[in-house]
Length: 306
Image (cartoon, rainbow, N blue to C red; front, side):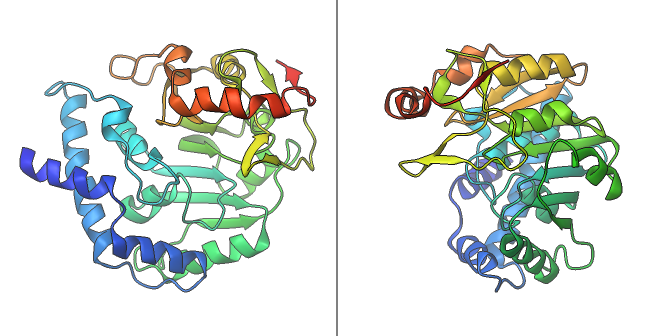
């Protein structure tokens, strides 16, 4: 069994060529049935889930996030971390919300929807990307019968909760993914229609732990890019940690680049997922580089202390 798990992990750590081509086609709106690479990925993930459930049952020792990261659909290692978290927590009602879903493929909920049958609600402000997402899920053998809802709309604090309720998402959900390169902090602060067990949020990691700041709220906010990086947007890690505590969540870790962090609702799984010191999420190479190379270029722009 251990050899099987090791082989599965090796497959998942390297995006299979067939799956990579499948994802590329999906971005262009040409995707069809999932090829063998994705099938292998699903089988490997089921093996990993069995291992994680053994940890939850006290039969094995927990892993660090760096040991479980892999990418099937997510832009970085979030797919592996989320699989690990829900292996420990249990899948629950299998309901997830993605705010800024992009093309529906390269995001944090696609793997759970495609490979584990989750019920997803995805918001995307760009109509071209929203159409690509609908095409992908309508043509995939795993989701064509029951696709996630793709909503093409611009999200603001004013309409967020009404949109969630309008599309049947209210009360407990399992995952909220916030990755809009913009007013992420203000949106999470405003959300009260749903109570996610897990929140994955993109932070503005170039601040490190220096300040608790966010960009000012504006309903029509657009990200400011510097050298190809979206750096005038979002909020710092201290700002998100403060907000999470107010809303009843604790920081449990980050992916290895340090700009996507994960929070778990208090009282859910403290024995296996204890709160981590924010310093652990800031002591990463990309964060250190960003503070030196990118922060000086935007630190004098308007930021709000929170």
